[in-house]
Length: 114
Length: 117
Image 1 (tube, rainbow over the protein chains, first blue to last red):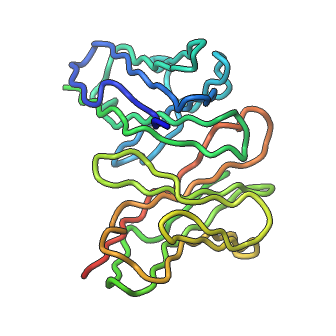
Image 2 (image 1 turned 45 degrees about the horizontal axis):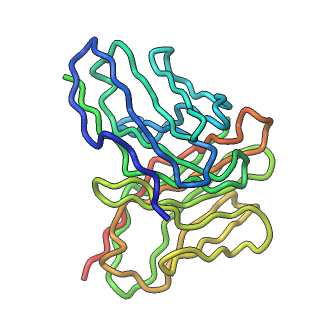
Image 3 (image 1 turned 90 degrees about the vertical axis):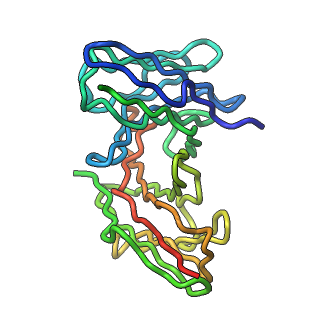
């Protein structure tokens, strides 16, 4: 079974631009979560989607948004990029939403904001 | 506040020796604990999890972890380290607390494991 895939793998943007990242979960998985990883802040939860509904949101500004499609694929969007948005963005999928569910991570999208 | 701590930034071990990567947590209620490993330029790979039951959990690649409720710890262990185990290890916790927390993993800051030949 194919793992979680994320596109693109690398991205360079300039301040003020916006960016859209894509995540395809493992086949059959219906929950997708997004995390930001930076050297300073570590791994931080962005949001979780299940059945096209946002179930939980982390402590990030409204510039960060996401959505999930009927096939469980998810996108996240960052508008008005700032230098501090440079990070590795990780997507994780699980069969369902629930405390016991194991999240499986994709390889990430590395975003560099200049 | 709910949190996870990995007290060591780096752990150095000789190949063939046992290894321990430490993790402590602070959550109310019964935690659900996870270990992940990250190799350079890769995402996180799931190693093991503790939900309930036996305090010793066995996972992938020969790793195991021991849940200790009284010490609020969930240390990762392996009897004999390999050079290929060198990577960044993350402990993570999920805690019960309503529907708003179902998908959120709280991660420790990570511990770099260096296994030398």
